[in-house]
Structures are given as structure tokens and as C-alpha cells.
Length: 594
Ligand SMILES: Cc1ncc(C[n+]2csc(CCOP(=O)(O)OP(=O)(O)O)c2C)c(N)n1
Ligand SMILES: [Mg+2]
Image (cartoon, rainbow, N blue to C red):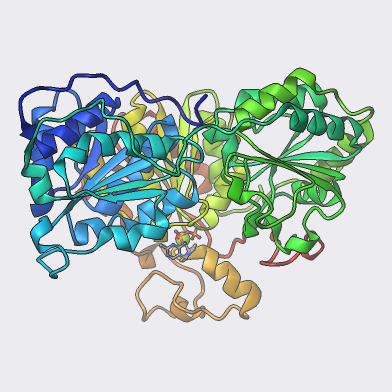
């Protein structure tokens, strides 16, 4: 049993002739089924790039325009496939440009492997040109890391890296490769056993006793709720979760990471919980007498005030990572297990609680009386409306959605209803602006036949906008639905709510515009900045701007139908707030509805 889609088995094709260290690395990638790498070259990674040209029929090399873009593209590839995403950068600035994408993968448990060039071993530690001690820098944001000094270790280390990245709780692994190691001549042994003392990589499995106790707790529950997260996606447990819900009739609340793990249109779906979750998900969790926490980590954006979170209920916590158990919230029953296994075993014995009708009806009433909603009659194009329209137009086709970070991300989570796992790509734990465009790019490379749309904000898009060039030149026709409010909207919302609307560097236009200080009359067409359509066109994209609500649907359709990369720049008001909202560290009783 594996927690992510299995990598193909290592083939044994160890040559007897010496070959360069770089060739060994690339052959090892091929052996592990890698078909794409996102790689930006430089002096200390040139041998790797030279080797990649010798394997061009087996591995596609996508050249991002910034290493951070390459890192997030590797994540988009990994998140949308379950396979390892691979990114490569040179030493020094190339390597440091990867850090954010690595840290992001760590927090969201995404299996990526980052290969970095390093200065030659004789000069390591001498402040050589383009030297950074990247393993030291990344120590706490990787699952594992190597500074490889002996070329004879290359084949084994790459094998270990795949093992560590994909087993247990997935995560990022860094391999730092000094240039002299890349050019050294070695006879590789691709079958050399791994050497990972202290790491078994074995998949922990729930015990029979634990499964029985969980089944008993479910049978006795009167107000149970499932709180599910990224573990459902990582372990491939979506089908088992659906079966459990169909068998027991228990309502489901999802984290941001868990979206797409349970059908958005299922009658028992209570949608997202937490800070910008639905009223009904938060009320249900708050009133629950049993919280079934599956593949989650009780993040503060979910719990708010921890002592008040789900305080009327018993807690069952199933997670593959033992260190998450009792970390934030003590569990009445904890099981360290692969979630897919635990749920499939549970499904064999579980019985529906005696009578849930009243509880489910209560949840449905909350849903009816306090739905996720917006002003459908607004004159302007509301961002929620644009997402709702995109969902309506794409729900019957294979679609993958990526996002930036901010209000648009929360609205995408609230209003796009996902049906299949791995179709929702969003930076949850780290909340990294700039994630969306490159992540969509990586997903599209892995799924050329699917529609891949990045729902982005104007701030976030500018953080990795250079990847327009990659998409055009590498023929990766993704779509960008830009919800352009001319502001760092999410921060504006906090200014409005908690700082008397005092604007503090959250307007993205010229500083002599009164909007800079929140004193404007709104932003007219002539004041909009920058001109995203011209920028996109400059990169070779198709692009269109819409301001009128009456033109939105037709423009969205044009974007969807376009065979080319396409930017739809939609003017949306910045006055809109993401609601509901539970302020940081507060409880459902403090929930803001309007
Ligand atoms: C790299 C990074 N820097 C800063 C932040 C803090 N931050 C969170 S949301 C946000 C505003 C995002 O603006 P935009 O992308 O336009 O999205 P909007 O909220 O307007 O929809 C900021 C600055 C962040 N999350 N990531
Ligand atoms: Mg914005």
C-alpha cells in the first residue's frame, strides 16, 4: 500500500562502463518513471542539463522563467498526478529561488524532489561564486535533504529520495549536487540497497481494535461530523470516504486541502469549514458529539480558538503522521494509519448510527438558512459570480483549478464545486501568492487533455507573471481567470474589518492615485494598472478584458474554447469581502455574516 500513486519500479540497467555523475542522476530519474522536469540552468547545474539532452526522448525539460515558477510547476505536476514532481536549479541564487516552493510543499505534504547544483566540494564553505549552503538553509523545510559528496552514492541517493518523498506523509526532498560530483566518472549501481537508518517508510495501518472502536463510536453517535483534509487526496481515499458516507449518512466538512476529496454536490457535503468556511460546516462541527478527523492537522485556520473547537464532541483522529496526533487537539481515539486503509477496513464493519435524520435535517436547515451566497443582482461583476459561472460552464468536463492566494482563492474554494480528487491545486499551509500560474502550468504538462484554469488575483499573478513566457514558448495552453480588484484584496478586507479601513500599502496602482489612501471614488477604466491584457499579449497569449456583467459568460466561453494560453482579465470591485468569516483565534459564535 502506498500513500501516493506508485512510481514505476526501479529497472535494473546498471551499466558496466563509467559514466558521468550527471548521467547517473538523469538515468535514475528515468528509472523512477520521471517524464518531465522543470529546470533552470546555471554554471553549477550545466552538467545535469547536458545530460538531460542525452535523455531528451525520455524526459521533457520545461524551462521556467524563474526557479520559483519551476518549483511550483513541479508541485502542480505532483498535486494533479500523485507522482513526484521534479525541479532543478543551479547553485546560489538558483537554489534560494526554490526555497518558497519547497517550504510550500512541506506544509501541504506534496512529494517533490529538488535537485540543486552546488559549487565543487574543494571550495564548499569558502564563499565561492554562487555558493549558498542550501541544505543548511532548507533543513527545516524539507522532509529530507542531501549534500552529496561521493559520486558513488548518486544512484542510491536518488532512489532514497523517491522513497522518502512518497512514503508515509509525502513531502519535499532536496539533493544538492556539487559540480565535481556531476562530472566525475562512475559505474553506477542502481540496485544498491537504500541506507536510511531511522526511516522505515513502512505504511502504518490501523489495528483491528482501533477500527472496531471507531465503528462503535460511530454507531453510538447522535451528531457525528466528518472533518476531512489533504490526507484523503494524498492516500487516494476519496472512494472509501464516499462509501463511508453513503453507508452511515454522516455529513462532511472539508478543509481547504481536502476539497475535491468529496463531491461538492453531494447532499451531505457541508463544504469548507474554518475561517472562511460555511456557517453550516462550522455550526455542525461546533455541535457535533463525534468529530471524525480524517487526514487533517487541526490547522489554526480551521480551529480558531482551539479550546472551543468541537468541544462538545469526542474526537477520532486518523492520520499517517504520528507527530500530528494530539499536537493541537487531544484525540479520544487516535489511529496512526494510512487513511485509505483505515477507511476501507472501517467500511467492512461500520453500521449507520441509529437515527441521524434529525441531525442531518438540522445541518440541512443551517445550510438552507445560511447558504454560501452573494448578491446575484449586483451591477458589477462580483468575483463569486465569475467563479460560479466558470463552474457552470466547466462542470461537465475534466477541469483542474489552480489559484493564487487571497480573496479569490477563498471564493474559488467556496463556489467551485469539485467532483474528482486532484482537480484542486491551492497553496494552503504556506499560503503563497504566485502559486497559481506555475502550478497550473505543471498540471497542464501532466494533463494535456484537461482544461486547466488558474483563478488568480492581480497581486498573486504579478508574483510569477514571467511564467506567461514558459506557457507560450513551451506550448502549455492554460487559462487564467484574473479576478482583478486592483488591490491586495484579502489584506484590504482585514484593514476594513480590524483597522478602520486605513489603507496601508494594499493598493496596487500608482501612489499618486487617491485610492492609495482609500480616498478614491472607485477605480475607473483609465486608472486600471497594470494593463494585463497587453502584458499577456506581449508574451504571445490571447487575452481579453471584461468590465460588463452582460459580457462575462460569453468571454468565459471564449477563454475555455481557446486552444491557446488565454488570459481573461475581469474587473471586479475591491469592496467585496469574503464571508462568512470567523476572526483569527475566535469561535463560531463570533462569526461575521455581513
Ligand atoms: C508571497 C506572499 N506575500 C504576501 C502574502 C500576504 N497576502 C495574503 S493574501 C494577499 C493579497 C493577495 O492579493 P491578490 O492576489 O490580488 O488577491 P485578492 O485578495 O485581491 O483576491 C497578501 C498580500 C502572501 N500570502 N504571500
Ligand atoms: Mg487583488
